[in-house]
Image 1 (cartoon, rainbow, N blue to C red):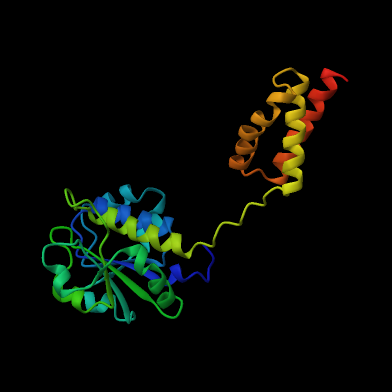
Image 2 (cartoon, one colour):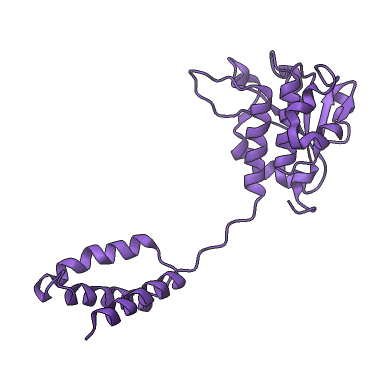
Amino acid sequence: MASDSPLRNLSVVLVEPTGPANVGLAARATKAFGLGGLRIVGRVPGGPGEASAWAARAADALAAARLFPTLDAAVADCAFRVGTASARGGLGEDVELRAPREAAAEILAAAARAPVALLFGPEANGLPTETLLRCTLVCAIPTSPDYPSLNLAQAVTAVAYELASTAAPPSPSTERADPAEAALLEERLLRLLRRVGFTDQRQQNRAAYPVRRLLARARATPRDVRLLLGVLAHLERRIGP
């Protein structure tokens, strides 16, 4: 990620986590998606090195995690705070819940101006409603009503992915072949089919439709057309006059 990416202004805040695996995997997600860092309210759970084992090659991100005694201390520099929650019964009546994808652009716009905190946890019951009401907005990951539960690390990964995907520059459009070149390819292919006896003059029009449809679906690039024209030229030479 570019150093000036708004993702660098996003901090993942784990509130009193209890699972070392979740902490290590959250560190991996933070690093993998280019977020600014990990903050932990409370302590790193588990024995020495246990969370690091789950962090794998993101052990540096875990080692750089900042520890805070309270949530207020952890988010003191973040006026824009994003809570996360499951759509538990009745919560939607108190808090407006938005899918991470729907909220991503607003979150990134805020992060382009100042630090933003992404709040997660605790594992057992999630963030209390009182905490969510103090957030700028609250994200709920769309899940199946038959099994709406995600663990802490999964939630961090899903939210980080949506933010990174929104922040990523659009893929450059693939250049398409000139219609005249595509028409030449179609003509040469049909002519070759006729020469090898696959079609005759009477069948040529019927054969043209599937060939034209196939070339259209292929969304050929100029390079594709040049390659295929070269193949046809080689076959024509081998066949002879």
